[in-house]
Length: 254
Image (tube, rainbow, N blue to C red):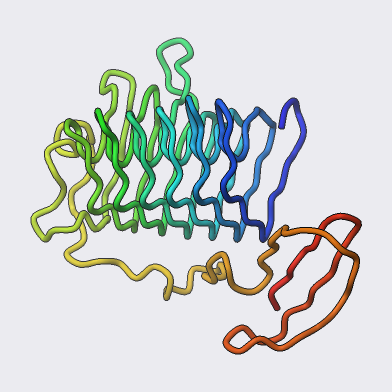
């Protein structure tokens, strides 16, 4: 994905992809939207186990990033203006920044891009060196109403940030303890008090968006081969419409 295009990914699943950067998706684009999609078991030998993108604006909603691997940014390596809502980033692994790495830009001593996260779970991510959940550089960051728990790295177990060019607002999150976050947050985050005293069930909140996760209605799974169209009833899944195109079988879960 390159250039000034606007790219949209809806109701899709990316599994077992690998690349040097961006195990599933790599590139740069003007506007990048992901909704109701799942990225798992993708691998990058450098950065962005699932996605490595430079964007004008990225909107990620109702999506899951799990079990992705890279050297830098286990799941997501992003730069530009980014908004992530109603999503899960869990069980990803990297040497640096186990869950997400975000880099903004400094122009004339001003940080000009932002990352916003709201209603997200960021948990059980691991970095072998630093930044179990997050790595930030030249960044304006706003994180609210999220569960950020059980992330690990030998140093900076939750957050690694370059303080001199990073502004982080992370008030109103659950850090896994009534006593608040670990030392990496205290040392790197400027604003994080007050924190929540219990896990937030953001999936049940009415915030104007659907809270159905990937793998429910509308998921598209690209599988394989012949040309056929049938509708069947699967126990526990309801009606499943199967539409095949030449060489590709697409399942749409109703």
